[in-house]
Amino acid sequence: MTSWDADPAHHDDESGLVDRAVSGDRAAFEQLYRRHRDRVYGVVWRIAGGDAALAEDLLQEAFVRAWRKLDSFRGDSRFGTWLHRLAVNVALSDRRIRVRQVHRETALEGTVERSAYGEPDVRAPEQMDLERAIAQLPERARTVLVLFDVEGYSHAEIADMTGMAVGSSKAQLHRARRLVREDLEK
Amino acid sequence: MKKTVGEQELLRRIGDLPREIEPRNDPWPTIAARIDRTAERRPGSGGARTWLWRAAAASLFVALAAGLLIGPRLGDLPTVTSGDTVASSAAGDLRLPATLAANEAEYQAAFREFITVGRARQGLSPQTIDRIEAGWADLRDTEDALTAALAESPGNAFLTARMMELRARQLGFLQQLAALDQDYRRLTT
Image 1 (cartoon, rainbow over the protein chains, first blue to last red):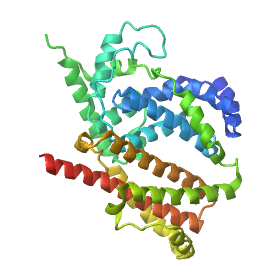
Image 2: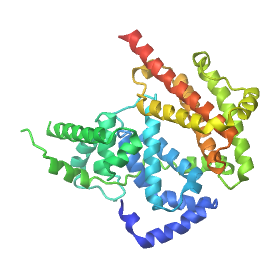
Image 3: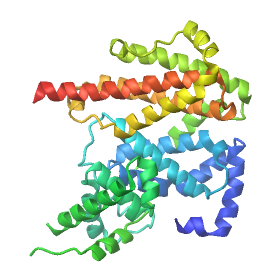
Image 4: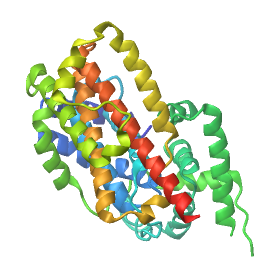
Protein backbone atom coordinates (compact mmCIF):
# COMPACT_ATOMS: atom_id res chain seq x y z
CA MET A 1 0.00 0.00 0.00
CA THR A 2 2.86 2.35 0.72
CA SER A 3 6.49 2.73 -0.21
CA TRP A 4 7.65 1.79 3.27
CA ASP A 5 5.47 -1.31 3.14
CA ALA A 6 7.20 -2.46 -0.01
CA ASP A 7 10.74 -1.96 1.27
CA PRO A 8 12.14 -5.35 2.47
CA ALA A 9 14.95 -3.78 4.49
CA HIS A 10 12.46 -1.53 6.21
CA HIS A 11 10.26 -4.55 6.91
CA ASP A 12 13.11 -6.57 8.47
CA ASP A 13 14.12 -3.66 10.62
CA GLU A 14 10.53 -3.10 11.61
CA SER A 15 9.97 -6.74 12.48
CA GLY A 16 12.61 -6.41 15.17
CA LEU A 17 10.92 -3.34 16.56
CA VAL A 18 7.55 -5.07 16.52
CA ASP A 19 8.97 -8.12 18.34
CA ARG A 20 10.46 -5.88 20.99
CA ALA A 21 7.23 -3.91 21.33
CA VAL A 22 5.20 -7.11 21.68
CA SER A 23 7.45 -8.13 24.54
CA GLY A 24 6.62 -4.85 26.26
CA ASP A 25 9.47 -2.60 25.10
CA ARG A 26 7.89 0.83 25.10
CA ALA A 27 10.91 2.49 23.50
CA ALA A 28 10.52 0.18 20.51
CA PHE A 29 6.86 1.04 20.32
CA GLU A 30 7.73 4.74 20.38
CA GLN A 31 10.01 4.17 17.38
CA LEU A 32 7.14 2.49 15.58
CA TYR A 33 4.97 5.44 16.52
CA ARG A 34 7.52 7.91 15.12
CA ARG A 35 7.68 5.97 11.86
CA HIS A 36 3.96 5.70 11.33
CA ARG A 37 2.50 8.73 13.08
CA ASP A 38 2.18 11.01 10.08
CA ARG A 39 0.79 8.26 7.87
CA VAL A 40 -1.86 7.36 10.43
CA TYR A 41 -2.64 11.00 11.13
CA GLY A 42 -3.09 11.65 7.42
CA VAL A 43 -5.88 9.12 7.07
CA VAL A 44 -7.72 9.87 10.32
CA TRP A 45 -7.48 13.62 9.67
CA ARG A 46 -9.19 13.20 6.32
CA ILE A 47 -11.82 10.81 7.65
CA ALA A 48 -12.48 13.33 10.43
CA GLY A 49 -13.18 15.97 7.80
CA GLY A 50 -10.09 18.02 8.58
CA ASP A 51 -10.94 18.39 12.26
CA ALA A 52 -7.44 18.55 13.74
CA ALA A 53 -8.49 18.15 17.36
CA LEU A 54 -10.62 15.11 16.60
CA ALA A 55 -7.90 13.66 14.38
CA GLU A 56 -5.34 13.99 17.17
CA ASP A 57 -7.73 12.19 19.51
CA LEU A 58 -8.12 9.43 16.94
CA LEU A 59 -4.37 9.24 16.41
CA GLN A 60 -3.88 8.85 20.12
CA GLU A 61 -6.62 6.24 20.39
CA ALA A 62 -5.25 4.27 17.45
CA PHE A 63 -1.80 3.93 18.96
CA VAL A 64 -3.09 3.10 22.42
CA ARG A 65 -5.25 0.38 20.88
CA ALA A 66 -2.34 -0.81 18.77
CA TRP A 67 -0.27 -1.21 21.92
CA ARG A 68 -3.04 -3.16 23.61
CA LYS A 69 -3.61 -5.36 20.58
CA LEU A 70 0.02 -5.97 19.62
CA ASP A 71 -0.33 -9.58 20.72
CA SER A 72 -2.96 -10.08 18.04
CA PHE A 73 -0.58 -8.91 15.29
CA ARG A 74 0.40 -12.19 13.68
CA GLY A 75 2.78 -10.85 11.08
CA ASP A 76 0.54 -12.05 8.23
CA SER A 77 0.63 -8.49 6.91
CA ARG A 78 3.10 -5.68 7.29
CA PHE A 79 2.88 -3.84 10.58
CA GLY A 80 2.12 -0.61 8.75
CA THR A 81 -0.80 -2.21 6.95
CA TRP A 82 -2.16 -3.68 10.18
CA LEU A 83 -1.77 -0.38 12.00
CA HIS A 84 -3.32 1.61 9.18
CA ARG A 85 -6.39 -0.59 9.11
CA LEU A 86 -6.70 -0.46 12.88
CA ALA A 87 -6.56 3.34 12.75
CA VAL A 88 -9.21 3.46 10.05
CA ASN A 89 -11.46 1.25 12.16
CA VAL A 90 -10.90 3.50 15.17
CA ALA A 91 -11.85 6.53 13.09
CA LEU A 92 -14.89 4.88 11.56
CA SER A 93 -16.27 3.76 14.89
CA ASP A 94 -15.33 6.75 16.96
CA ARG A 95 -16.70 9.47 14.75
CA ARG A 96 -20.15 7.94 14.83
CA ILE A 97 -20.64 8.52 18.49
CA ARG A 98 -19.03 11.91 18.65
CA VAL A 99 -21.44 14.40 20.11
CA ARG A 100 -18.92 17.17 20.23
CA GLN A 101 -19.61 20.01 17.86
CA VAL A 102 -17.41 19.58 14.84
CA HIS A 103 -15.96 22.89 13.81
CA ARG A 104 -15.60 22.69 10.09
CA GLU A 105 -13.67 25.91 10.11
CA THR A 106 -10.83 24.06 11.83
CA ALA A 107 -7.80 25.48 10.16
CA LEU A 108 -6.98 23.58 7.04
CA GLU A 109 -4.54 26.33 6.26
CA GLY A 110 -1.02 25.27 6.98
CA THR A 111 -1.76 21.58 7.16
CA VAL A 112 -0.77 20.87 3.61
CA GLU A 113 2.33 23.00 3.93
CA ARG A 114 3.29 21.09 7.06
CA SER A 115 3.04 17.75 5.34
CA ALA A 116 5.78 15.27 6.04
CA TYR A 117 7.35 16.14 2.72
CA GLY A 118 8.99 19.13 4.33
CA GLU A 119 9.10 22.50 2.64
CA PRO A 120 5.96 24.30 1.49
CA ASP A 121 4.71 22.91 -1.78
CA VAL A 122 4.04 25.18 -4.74
CA ARG A 123 0.85 23.17 -5.30
CA ALA A 124 -0.38 24.00 -1.81
CA PRO A 125 -3.23 26.34 -2.83
CA GLU A 126 -4.60 23.77 -5.26
CA GLN A 127 -4.25 21.01 -2.68
CA MET A 128 -5.91 23.15 -0.05
CA ASP A 129 -8.94 23.66 -2.26
CA LEU A 130 -9.14 19.94 -2.80
CA GLU A 131 -8.70 19.13 0.89
CA ARG A 132 -11.46 21.61 1.72
CA ALA A 133 -13.77 20.10 -0.88
CA ILE A 134 -13.13 16.61 0.51
CA ALA A 135 -13.64 17.79 4.09
CA GLN A 136 -17.02 19.24 3.18
CA LEU A 137 -18.36 16.02 1.70
CA PRO A 138 -21.11 14.14 3.52
CA GLU A 139 -19.50 11.66 5.89
CA ARG A 140 -20.18 8.42 4.03
CA ALA A 141 -19.14 9.89 0.70
CA ARG A 142 -16.01 11.37 2.24
CA THR A 143 -15.10 8.11 3.94
CA VAL A 144 -15.35 6.14 0.71
CA LEU A 145 -13.43 8.70 -1.34
CA VAL A 146 -10.64 8.89 1.23
CA LEU A 147 -10.37 5.12 1.57
CA PHE A 148 -10.63 4.33 -2.15
CA ASP A 149 -9.03 7.22 -3.97
CA VAL A 150 -6.53 8.42 -1.40
CA GLU A 151 -5.66 5.26 0.53
CA GLY A 152 -6.13 2.63 -2.14
CA TYR A 153 -8.54 0.28 -0.39
CA SER A 154 -10.84 -1.81 -2.57
CA HIS A 155 -14.61 -1.50 -2.47
CA ALA A 156 -14.78 -4.94 -0.84
CA GLU A 157 -12.41 -3.80 1.91
CA ILE A 158 -14.36 -0.59 2.39
CA ALA A 159 -17.60 -2.54 2.57
CA ASP A 160 -16.06 -4.77 5.21
CA MET A 161 -14.84 -1.85 7.28
CA THR A 162 -17.91 0.35 7.04
CA GLY A 163 -20.68 -2.22 6.93
CA MET A 164 -22.12 -0.80 3.73
CA ALA A 165 -22.71 -2.93 0.63
CA VAL A 166 -20.11 -2.96 -2.13
CA GLY A 167 -22.65 -1.33 -4.44
CA SER A 168 -23.23 1.43 -1.91
CA SER A 169 -19.51 2.02 -1.68
CA LYS A 170 -19.32 2.43 -5.45
CA ALA A 171 -22.32 4.74 -5.47
CA GLN A 172 -20.87 6.85 -2.65
CA LEU A 173 -17.58 7.14 -4.52
CA HIS A 174 -19.35 8.28 -7.67
CA ARG A 175 -21.30 10.83 -5.65
CA ALA A 176 -18.21 12.00 -3.79
CA ARG A 177 -16.21 12.59 -6.95
CA ARG A 178 -19.08 14.49 -8.52
CA LEU A 179 -19.49 16.70 -5.46
CA VAL A 180 -15.77 17.41 -5.24
CA ARG A 181 -15.60 18.30 -8.92
CA GLU A 182 -18.60 20.61 -8.56
CA ASP A 183 -16.98 22.25 -5.56
CA LEU A 184 -13.70 22.78 -7.38
CA GLU A 185 -15.50 24.20 -10.42
CA LYS A 186 -17.19 26.95 -8.39
CA MET B 1 -14.53 32.14 -15.74
CA LYS B 2 -15.84 28.78 -14.67
CA LYS B 3 -13.17 26.07 -14.79
CA THR B 4 -13.92 22.47 -15.60
CA VAL B 5 -12.41 19.63 -13.60
CA GLY B 6 -12.61 16.29 -15.37
CA GLU B 7 -12.50 12.90 -13.68
CA GLN B 8 -8.90 12.21 -14.68
CA GLU B 9 -7.83 15.67 -13.56
CA LEU B 10 -9.51 15.09 -10.21
CA LEU B 11 -7.81 11.71 -9.77
CA ARG B 12 -4.46 13.27 -10.67
CA ARG B 13 -4.93 15.94 -8.05
CA ILE B 14 -6.03 13.41 -5.45
CA GLY B 15 -2.98 11.35 -6.32
CA ASP B 16 -0.79 14.36 -5.56
CA LEU B 17 -2.17 14.77 -2.06
CA PRO B 18 0.33 13.92 0.67
CA ARG B 19 -0.47 10.67 2.49
CA GLU B 20 1.56 11.76 5.46
CA ILE B 21 0.50 14.78 7.45
CA GLU B 22 2.23 16.02 10.55
CA PRO B 23 -0.13 16.70 13.46
CA ARG B 24 0.03 20.14 15.01
CA ASN B 25 0.62 18.62 18.44
CA ASP B 26 2.59 15.47 19.09
CA PRO B 27 0.32 13.28 21.22
CA TRP B 28 3.09 10.86 22.23
CA PRO B 29 3.30 12.09 25.86
CA THR B 30 -0.41 11.38 26.29
CA ILE B 31 -0.12 8.04 24.51
CA ALA B 32 2.84 7.08 26.68
CA ALA B 33 0.93 8.01 29.82
CA ARG B 34 -2.06 5.94 28.73
CA ILE B 35 0.19 3.04 27.85
CA ASP B 36 1.81 3.24 31.26
CA ARG B 37 -1.61 3.14 32.90
CA THR B 38 -2.69 0.16 30.84
CA ALA B 39 0.63 -1.66 30.57
CA GLU B 40 -0.42 -4.23 33.11
CA ARG B 41 -3.46 -5.02 30.95
CA ARG B 42 -1.35 -6.23 28.03
CA PRO B 43 -1.86 -9.91 27.29
CA GLY B 44 1.04 -11.88 28.64
CA SER B 45 2.04 -9.30 31.17
CA GLY B 46 -0.04 -10.72 33.97
CA GLY B 47 -1.22 -14.08 32.79
CA ALA B 48 -4.64 -15.27 31.77
CA ARG B 49 -5.97 -15.33 35.28
CA THR B 50 -5.20 -11.65 35.82
CA TRP B 51 -6.89 -10.85 32.54
CA LEU B 52 -10.03 -12.70 33.38
CA TRP B 53 -10.44 -11.01 36.71
CA ARG B 54 -9.66 -7.58 35.34
CA ALA B 55 -12.16 -8.02 32.54
CA ALA B 56 -14.78 -9.24 34.95
CA ALA B 57 -14.18 -6.38 37.35
CA ALA B 58 -14.22 -3.86 34.51
CA SER B 59 -17.50 -5.20 33.17
CA LEU B 60 -19.12 -4.83 36.57
CA PHE B 61 -17.75 -1.34 37.03
CA VAL B 62 -18.90 -0.19 33.63
CA ALA B 63 -22.31 -1.74 34.02
CA LEU B 64 -22.76 0.21 37.21
CA ALA B 65 -21.34 3.39 35.68
CA ALA B 66 -23.56 3.07 32.63
CA GLY B 67 -26.52 2.54 34.90
CA LEU B 68 -25.74 5.79 36.70
CA LEU B 69 -25.21 7.63 33.45
CA ILE B 70 -28.29 6.64 31.53
CA GLY B 71 -30.10 4.76 34.27
CA PRO B 72 -33.88 5.00 34.11
CA ARG B 73 -34.02 4.95 30.34
CA LEU B 74 -32.33 1.58 30.24
CA GLY B 75 -35.00 -0.08 32.28
CA ASP B 76 -35.56 -2.80 29.74
CA LEU B 77 -31.94 -3.89 29.78
CA PRO B 78 -30.55 -6.44 32.22
CA THR B 79 -29.29 -4.90 35.42
CA VAL B 80 -25.92 -6.23 36.42
CA THR B 81 -25.03 -6.84 40.00
CA SER B 82 -22.43 -9.11 41.46
CA GLY B 83 -25.20 -11.56 42.36
CA ASP B 84 -26.52 -11.61 38.81
CA THR B 85 -23.04 -12.18 37.53
CA VAL B 86 -22.57 -15.34 39.54
CA ALA B 87 -26.01 -16.59 38.63
CA SER B 88 -25.82 -15.86 34.93
CA SER B 89 -22.35 -17.29 34.55
CA ALA B 90 -23.62 -20.62 35.76
CA ALA B 91 -26.66 -20.72 33.49
CA GLY B 92 -27.11 -21.74 29.87
CA ASP B 93 -23.45 -22.53 29.19
CA LEU B 94 -24.16 -24.57 26.07
CA ARG B 95 -26.39 -21.96 24.46
CA LEU B 96 -24.18 -18.97 25.12
CA PRO B 97 -21.97 -19.02 21.99
CA ALA B 98 -24.95 -19.09 19.63
CA THR B 99 -26.72 -16.46 21.68
CA LEU B 100 -23.60 -14.34 21.70
CA ALA B 101 -23.37 -14.60 17.92
CA ALA B 102 -26.94 -13.35 17.55
CA ASN B 103 -26.27 -10.66 20.12
CA GLU B 104 -23.14 -9.61 18.23
CA ALA B 105 -25.00 -9.45 14.94
CA GLU B 106 -27.69 -7.24 16.44
CA TYR B 107 -25.13 -4.94 18.01
CA GLN B 108 -23.02 -4.67 14.87
CA ALA B 109 -26.10 -3.95 12.77
CA ALA B 110 -27.21 -1.22 15.15
CA PHE B 111 -23.74 0.23 15.27
CA ARG B 112 -23.41 0.34 11.51
CA GLU B 113 -26.76 1.96 11.14
CA PHE B 114 -26.20 4.38 13.96
CA ILE B 115 -26.39 7.96 12.86
CA THR B 116 -24.25 10.47 14.62
CA VAL B 117 -26.20 12.60 17.01
CA GLY B 118 -26.65 15.71 15.00
CA ARG B 119 -28.79 18.49 16.31
CA ALA B 120 -29.01 17.22 19.87
CA ARG B 121 -25.46 18.14 20.65
CA GLN B 122 -26.36 21.78 20.22
CA GLY B 123 -28.66 21.49 23.20
CA LEU B 124 -26.32 19.57 25.46
CA SER B 125 -24.08 21.12 28.05
CA PRO B 126 -20.35 20.46 27.79
CA GLN B 127 -20.59 18.48 31.04
CA THR B 128 -23.27 16.23 29.56
CA ILE B 129 -21.23 15.72 26.42
CA ASP B 130 -18.20 14.83 28.51
CA ARG B 131 -20.24 12.33 30.52
CA ILE B 132 -21.62 10.72 27.39
CA GLU B 133 -18.18 10.48 25.81
CA ALA B 134 -16.63 9.18 29.01
CA GLY B 135 -19.38 6.59 29.36
CA TRP B 136 -18.87 5.36 25.84
CA ALA B 137 -15.09 5.32 26.25
CA ASP B 138 -15.51 3.14 29.34
CA LEU B 139 -17.71 0.76 27.41
CA ARG B 140 -15.16 0.54 24.63
CA ASP B 141 -12.34 -0.07 27.10
CA THR B 142 -14.32 -2.90 28.59
CA GLU B 143 -15.01 -4.25 25.12
CA ASP B 144 -11.26 -4.30 24.47
CA ALA B 145 -10.60 -6.09 27.75
CA LEU B 146 -13.32 -8.66 27.23
CA THR B 147 -12.35 -9.26 23.62
CA ALA B 148 -8.77 -9.92 24.62
CA ALA B 149 -9.85 -12.16 27.49
CA LEU B 150 -12.15 -14.15 25.19
CA ALA B 151 -9.32 -14.53 22.71
CA GLU B 152 -7.31 -16.18 25.46
CA SER B 153 -10.22 -18.25 26.71
CA PRO B 154 -12.61 -18.87 23.80
CA GLY B 155 -15.95 -20.23 24.90
CA ASN B 156 -15.51 -19.20 28.51
CA ALA B 157 -19.09 -19.03 29.74
CA PHE B 158 -18.47 -16.34 32.31
CA LEU B 159 -16.75 -14.03 29.82
CA THR B 160 -19.34 -14.79 27.15
CA ALA B 161 -22.10 -13.76 29.51
CA ARG B 162 -20.25 -10.56 30.36
CA MET B 163 -19.81 -9.79 26.67
CA MET B 164 -23.52 -10.26 26.09
CA GLU B 165 -24.29 -7.87 28.91
CA LEU B 166 -21.80 -5.38 27.55
CA ARG B 167 -23.35 -5.56 24.09
CA ALA B 168 -26.76 -4.91 25.59
CA ARG B 169 -25.36 -1.86 27.35
CA GLN B 170 -23.71 -0.59 24.19
CA LEU B 171 -26.87 -1.16 22.19
CA GLY B 172 -28.85 0.71 24.80
CA PHE B 173 -26.32 3.51 24.75
CA LEU B 174 -26.65 3.94 20.99
CA GLN B 175 -30.42 3.77 21.21
CA GLN B 176 -30.40 6.45 23.90
CA LEU B 177 -28.28 8.75 21.74
CA ALA B 178 -30.62 8.22 18.80
CA ALA B 179 -33.63 8.93 21.05
CA LEU B 180 -31.93 12.05 22.34
CA ASP B 181 -31.50 13.28 18.80
CA GLN B 182 -35.10 12.49 17.90
CA ASP B 183 -36.40 14.27 21.01
CA TYR B 184 -34.39 17.34 20.17
CA ARG B 185 -35.62 17.38 16.59
CA ARG B 186 -39.22 17.03 17.74
CA LEU B 187 -38.89 19.88 20.23
CA THR B 188 -37.09 22.24 17.92
CA THR B 189 -38.83 21.75 14.59
